[in-house]
Length: 127
Image (cartoon, rainbow, N blue to C red; front, side, top):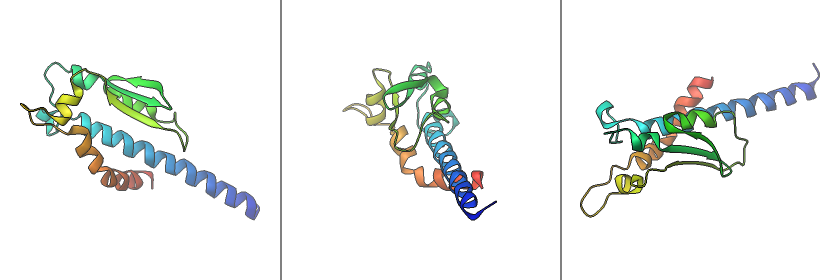
């Protein structure tokens, strides 16, 4: 294999590995946000409606719904795409951010703060 082909192969492998790292890290962040209080997480789960209202989208096009919405995004994005995760339950914002009467659970904000640790773990998985 010539030098140019070796470089192209290395670049392709690096792009693939980077996509895997991004995918694993994003999925891990969403899984952390979705972890019920009863399992050590921050998401309150009574009926499961809030948890099941998760929706993922790539460039505005919905690609997944429910507890497996994060997994639905794997392999469906390219670098430069805009990825969205949101909970569509009408009360999701109140549960996350809190109200005058209820302290916020901050399930997504807390998971996002931990994003660097999720990236480090994803790098370990890909290597």
